[in-house]
Length: 189
Image (cartoon, rainbow, N blue to C red; front, side):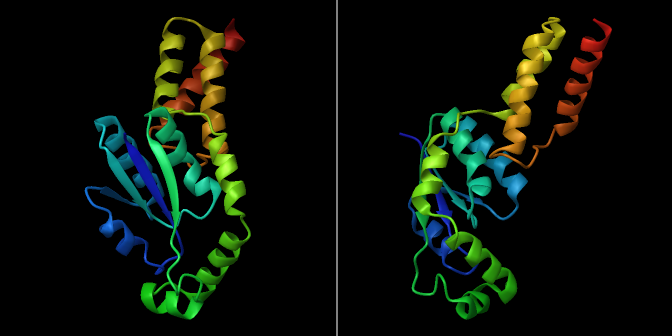
């Protein structure tokens, strides 16, 4: 079975150390968020059996796009909280990561404000989707002059962008062009 393990913790908490302990895993660095999504999508398409996302992954919005991709590409997913003895020690996290204390404190407050069980419930409700597939379908429907279906695809794409995958993917100019074509077609028809 294919699986992605999503590591969740603050800078300096030991995520990278933990990622390197997982045998036979392909590690996806998680701090460059948009790039991580592209790498994750590519590795899932290739069918890599075990992926580890090494990033803060504190909130629903951080994790949601990866869970959606996991569901789309038929991957099991798991969130592993990093619980080292210093995982919530702002001084120690600062020493280990070099990240400013005020940034760590803010992230810690945010992480602790989210009940883990509630986060898992929200993520379980996500529908599998690949934004590139949505755009491909929308473009196909436009070429076939199926405006209603193209419009629905773009609503799905906007939902992906704004709820759970809120950072647009590369190729967003394609999405904007498709949206413009759908609007022009509606106004001319």
